[in-house]
Image (cartoon, rainbow, N blue to C red):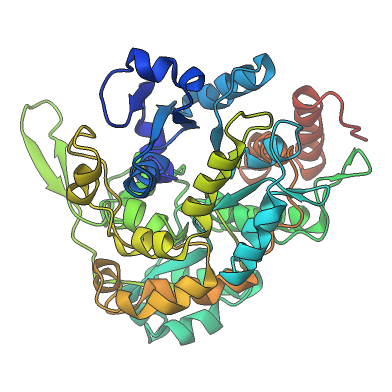
Amino acid sequence: MKKLISMLLVLLLTVSVFSGCGKTEEQANSNQTGEKVLKIWSFTDEIKTMAVAYRGKHPDVKIEYTMIPMTNGEYQTKLKSALQSGEAPDIIALEASFVREFIESDYLEDLSDLLPLAQELRTYQFTIDMATYDGQVKAYSYQATPGAMFYRRSLAKKYFGTDDPEKIQELVSDMKKFEEAAKIVKEKSKGNTYMVASVGDFTNLFFANREKPWVVDGKLYIDPKVDELFEIAKSFRQNGYEAQANQWQEGWFAGMNDSLVDAKGNPKQVFSYFLPTWGLPYVLMPNSSPKEVKVEGSDKTKKVGKDTSGDWACIRGPMPYQWGGTWIAVVKGTKNLELAKDFVKFATLDEENLKNWALGVYTNEYLKKIDPNIGDKLSQGPGDFVSSQKVVEEIVDKFDDASTSKFLAGQNSYRSFAEAAPYISLKLLQGTDDAIQRALNDPLNNYVSGKATKEQAIKQFKEAVKNTLPDLIVE
């Protein structure tokens, strides 16, 4: 996926046909003339990059690519409508937040016959489990997105006497220890450093480590891990261990470059962030430098914050988790079944392609040699963590001197993610997870802020689930 930030910025529906800007009469009649035309829908231009690379090896295939933004669920809405009307493309991209909804539907082809390739590449099992339903594998991913904990080295030295990743990992190896570390940070900083920017930063950890799914025998099930989340989140809010900065908003980013201030203008710092593989190059690194802000009451601007690059480290953190990712599926009933499956194999199960993807081979210059009409922006930089453990192990050393490693003071983040990936499990995921977890947001916030008792918050949660999923039994 073109990571969460990129997806939020996509505002327009874009349709492009490789080997030409416009759709010719020949292409419009291609199905009748026997030409190979592959229609792909996605919410990101990452699959477009894959499509150009694929066409470089298959010049006889013309790809019609449609990109639809996920803003306000536009992509999902258009996709459902197309599937129901029988006017869907050959291939669709599915994001982690809604992939299960489609995997559990009857709209996708069974791609289980590609499993031997996945096994040969030692594709991370959790990426396969995410796309498996009723014994059928209906999609594959080219990336794996294990999460990690990123912390400030200078603050670790200040409050714990060391910035060594192994020693810091020992101090935060479970949530109880993480909470104890948060207390130390607050006390030693006299409240000027928060352990996290938001309690929302660690909700994924609890969701990922439940013993049972949200729905058991058709009924809503609230796992003990959810109860634990309520208590830890309240502790962090009430004890001042979090900055109360909402994710993806200005205050949350401000903690990455030391421009965070409280209501009185006093400077504050954030010790750590929980982010997945894509969070390093697309979230943390771009927001770790000073920012230009407008001076109130003036046309002038000033720089706030400082450059924190080189002051970060990466560890597994208290619990394994995963965040995000893109899966590629073939629509059932496509007239181009074998061609569509071949594209899925290339994008997700081809060793050479995965290496090229991870190492940044697909530059704009490289892609333009295949299709001169793609413009000047399409490219894929190095660093995406791919879904094949075999490929990861073969290329991990190549990131020792990468920009991401320099940002982490020489630590190879690719190696850190490789260590975290085997611990991840997605076997509990269901198509209703995203809706249920969204329904928990407001009740959880009401509880941690003291606006509701736990009983009241749970009641609010159940009512929200009922409204969202009326067919689900909620007791």
